[in-house]
Image (cartoon, rainbow over all chains, first blue to last red; front, side, top):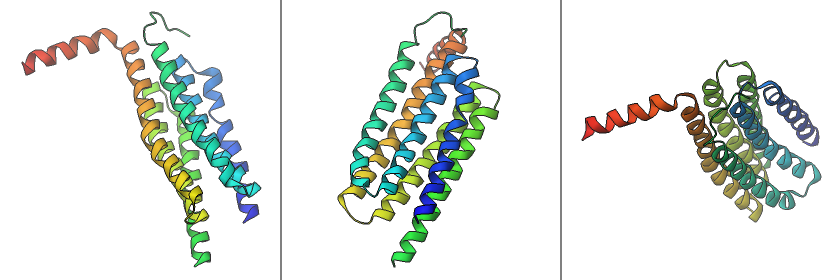
Length: 90
Length: 111
């Protein structure tokens, strides 16, 4: 069971590294913003796996809730900030 | 009984991680922003719900699993809403004038 969670954690790290390509070369700013949101969502599961591996998941659950709220607020606020810009080439 | 719970949680976590892998491939491979947000949002929501549900089953009936259920409900509501806001802003940027004129003509048709 321990080995299974280690395997899941390594797989999740590889999955998180994939959208960094879109963060680096994304044509518009919305692509980068979408990739950042996806990375944050996958990080929530990674924190949960780390909590199970350490055997103290009751401590990490609060971090998960806080991280989810921060991810949502960051996505909405930055999208609203870019709403009234005129030119958005980069 | 304990064996059954372990197998069920392992199956749910593996399914969720597989779905997240598909979403990550879609965010790199698809050609347009709207295609990318269409693929990533739906598949990532399913993946994270299945992953956290698997952890909640693994934990049993405790306060921790209740908190995990709260996280499931919040993420299942908030991630599609955030992506919808992002898509709305992007669509206004891309086809701004066409969108406004089409909305006005639709209102005239209704009234």
